[in-house]
Amino acid sequence: MDLAPDLDLGAVLKARKRAAGRQGVVTALAEALPRRLAERVAEEAGATGTLADQPDARLAALGEAVNRWRVKPVGSEGYRTAEVTLGGVATDELNQKTLEARRRPGLFVIGEAVDITGWLGGYNFQWAWSSGWAAGQAC
Ligand SMILES: Cc1cc2nc3c(=O)[nH]c(=O)nc-3n(C[C@H](O)[C@H](O)[C@H](O)COP(=O)(O)OP(=O)(O)OC[C@H]3O[C@@H](n4cnc5c(N)ncnc54)[C@H](O)[C@@H]3O)c2cc1C
Image (tube, rainbow, N blue to C red; front, side, top):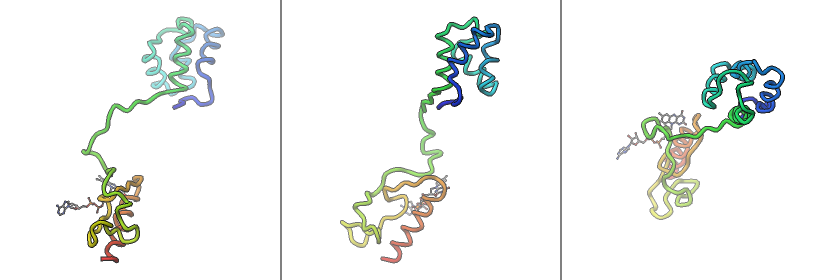
């Protein structure tokens, strides 16, 4: 993610170092970012003190951290907070109009039991209701 899309922050910080080296590194970052975020970015990069205290490589790293912020998920909360599940009966095993199983006439599969997953926001409910209605019409 680019947290300062209008700025090449590494270049800005290096230019600022030459023009106003006594400016605090956090203060300089806070011109582009909310202050608490600026503090955190500086802390992560081990940048304290003034711009003049920072080697150019560290200013480039600060710019990189802001213009190319990377988020690496470390896991999920598991089924405790899950709202929809992937997987289920493959759609090509079902009649697309009636939801009847091709291999087991008389067996209908609907809703979460089918390998269909919608965005959150009502699509899964709609699928559950609509597939149930379609199967109900055909039973
Ligand atoms: C916390 C949460 C929030 C959600 N929010 C949204 C949302 O905002 N919008 C949206 O679109 N979707 C949402 N969903 C997903 C949506 O609820 C499901 O996709 C939908 O309810 C699936 O309907 P279903 O009838 O296929 O299955 P279910 O609603 O799971 O119904 C299956 C039923 O079968 C019963 N059952 C299970 N085993 C047996 C058995 N052996 N004998 C008899 N009965 C059995 C269960 O008790 C259950 O009542 C949410 C889900 C969760 C968990």
